[in-house]
Structure formats: structure tokens, C-alpha cells
Image (cartoon, rainbow, N blue to C red; front, side):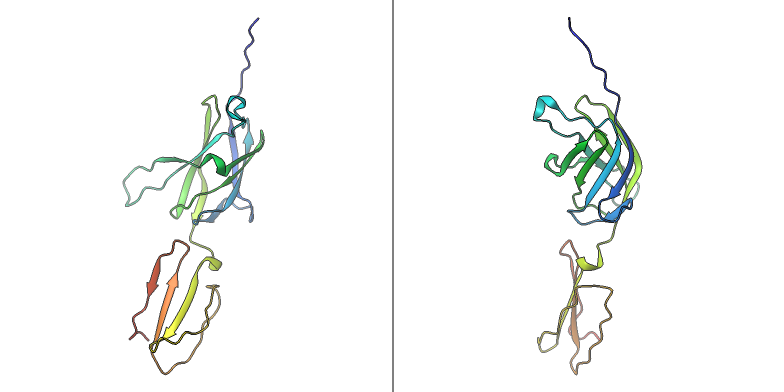
Length: 173
């Protein structure tokens, strides 16, 4: 006789940064979070693939709805039915909803489950050269105080984890 197995829908109880244990982390790619809950099922018919984890992207410009983006499958690790380890992609700063979808299409969504914050101090690089092009030492921790004296106007370059760069002009003081 055929049998039927009923699986309860997954539930998400927390989404915490694996390092700090807080429900927030840096907006750069590569931060690992632990999703805790119940009913996280692997797909036995698909090489034991973990559930799909999605984040609701922040709306840009205000007034626009965000959209769901799936985290790459190779960035989701099924630990057990109550824990998933996920390596986040880069994301805009702000709160996001997190959704887990099992192979049987049952889902759970935790609203504002995680907050992406600006890059860590160790993800900013501050370098400068004087107006003659002579380099000074680099500071890679934005919490360090920077004091230097030069007879020339410094050129300051700040680069964040997205490789966005702000450069002062040679005539800046």
C-alpha cells in the first residue's frame, strides 16, 4: 500500500550573525549567519539539497517594493532540521525579511529578521599621498586616529568594501 508522509512547514525563530550572535551584520558579501527554527528539510531527490533561503531586497529610492532574491544554493548548508548556515551575498544597508522554502514548497518568512549595516572598520582602507605623490603609511582600521603633518596638501583616498572610492582633491586641506 502507498503511504503518505506529512511534513510541517518550516518555522524561522532567529537569524543571527555567526560571529557576533546578533541579528545584524555587515552589508559586504561573505558574512555567515545561522538560521534557527524547525522543519528545515533536505531534498532527498536532489542530492540532499538544503532548503532555499531568500531575502527580500530593500527598495531603492523609496516607494518601490523590494523583490525576493534566492541565496545561491552552494552558500546554504543544512546542519540539521533546526539549523541552516548561510553565507550572505552583498546587500544594501537596511532591514530584510528572510524566507526559508523546503523542497515541498512550504515556506516561512520572518519579517525584518536581519539588518545589514555599513561595512566594518576593517573593511575600509584609508591611504594618502602628499601633493608631490609621495605615499604615507596606510590606515586600515577606520577607528584609528590619523594625524600627520606635511608641507604639501594631502590627497586622501577612502575605499569601502564595495570598492567605491572617494578621493580628496590635491588642494584639499
